Image 1 (cartoon, rainbow, N blue to C red):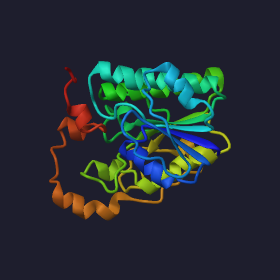
Image 2: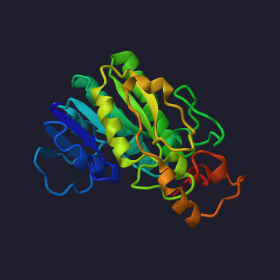
Image 3: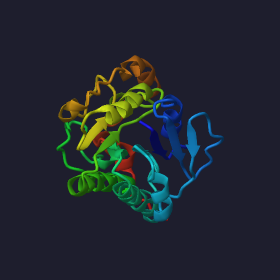
Image 4: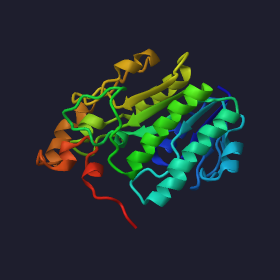
Length: 264
């Protein structure tokens, strides 16, 4: 790959990929509205507001692949999410359409399906049940990817990321945890697979507790190597068992599903 674009490169996942994908492409084009520091070897720093269509068009030009992490990453007001997550994601897909249709990895979220119950086993055909305005924006991004593939042949993979941290922070994350190493392996497989079409898959490691089935995406060749089990004793000791009728426990989206509607 000659040039790989990472949006949201100043965020936690963006910083992770910036470090671990160094040398994976001849050039890493890194973009954010936040400070990106100094460019390292093989890096291009391109500040960009994703809500500005002309700026996004220039950002995408010359790229062979895109990892789209940019946007609001937590629950927020509709107006804020509208600009970055709805309009920004549209601008990115449409710019890709005009510039050779580079393959896109879209960072979706488990919050696109957060109102499914924990006892539900989900796969790629399970219907969207967003648990928040943020989750709604991720469901929109997945549907945008479906549209751009069906109409324009723009291949893309929407990854419903669980909880990507060095280690799980609570009992829920024993099921949703995605190790940084497994995430990097997944990113590479998305761009190395011969064909991806439009695929929605779940970003979780090989944890003992399994809510999600990626059998439909086995053709990608991504096999998680890590498990949250090594952290179980530590997590359970630090976090008492919760009421099973608490909405944060009943639904897969956890606290996002339990929270009220976000207002100014």
